[in-house]
Every structure is written in structure tokens, then in C-alpha cells.
Amino acid sequence: MKKILISSTLILFSWMILAQEKGMPLPSWQEGEMEIHHIYTGRGEAVFCIFPDGTTLLIDAGDVGPHRDPQTTQASPDESRQPGEWIARYISKRLDFLPEKKIDYAFLTHFHRDHMGGVFENSPKTAKGGDYYLSGLTEVYEHLPFSKMIDRDWPSYQYPKPQ
Image 1: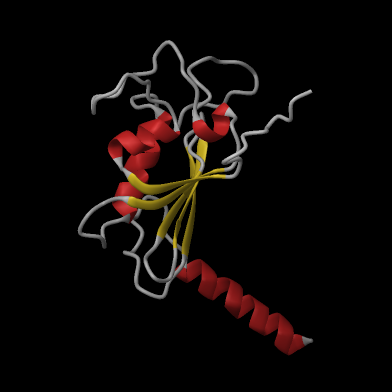
Image 2: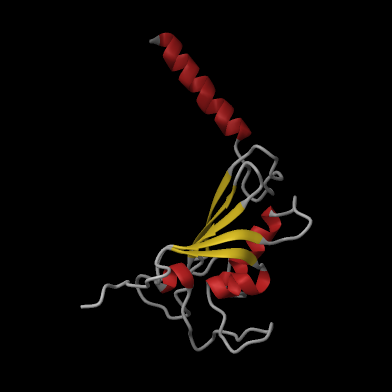
């Protein structure tokens, strides 16, 4: 029992010593490592993965809009940018190992604004040609393109099921 307690204590303290220091940049990704990043903007979330072979995957990228209610949290890191741009900036910094910054796959789990974005009075229009507004997933794409979009409802789009 004493050995287990000592071993547990040493493991705990070694973890604390090796843990990422707040405010310090993460080390660059290395081949063979897998990273999973939960990106929180206060107004929409995303998950970004780098797989051991360097393949990248973005899961959702939401934007619930500028409104404030009891369920809305404060924008993070601040309100100077839209959530999609904050997500793209974070991912872009993690892709420092790539010669061309792009996301291989973007996966949309479902059609809710906290997962894909919505159009709001402050939503900017694309500057890359076309007539659409930027919010969440489309705003990430504006700053950091992805090669393939995966949508769980394609090709039927029967969600919600017709009544």
C-alpha cells in the first residue's frame, strides 16, 4: 500500500512539472503524435484534431451570435473577432509544421448554430467572391480552407425527419 501511495504521489508531481504552463505556446506537433484540441470561443465551439500521420480534422465550428441571455457566456478571448476567425487563428498556429496551412477534413455533426454558425445582423459577407455571409464554419473556411467537407446527413438531409 505504501509503494502505491508513493508511486501515485511521484506520478502526480511529475505530471505537474511536465504540464503545459498557462500562457506558454504549445510545442510543435511531431509525426506520430495525436492532438485533440477543444476550442472554446464563448459563442461557439470546435474540436480540432491532428492525427499521427499529420492529417487534420475540424469537428464543428459554431457561432451562436451576438445576442446576450442567461445561457450566453462571455466571448473568449474577446469580442474583437467573430468566433470563426478565432477558431481559424488558433488552428493556423497549430499548423506551423505544414508548408500550406489548410484543414484536410471538416465534419459537421448537425445543423445547429452552435455547431455550424448562423446568420446575424453583424455577420460579414465573404470577400472571396460569392454572395454568402460568414459565421462559424463558413468563416473558418474564409480564413483557413479545408479540402473535404463531411456531413452526417448527406445525401438525404432527412433531419429533422418530416412529420
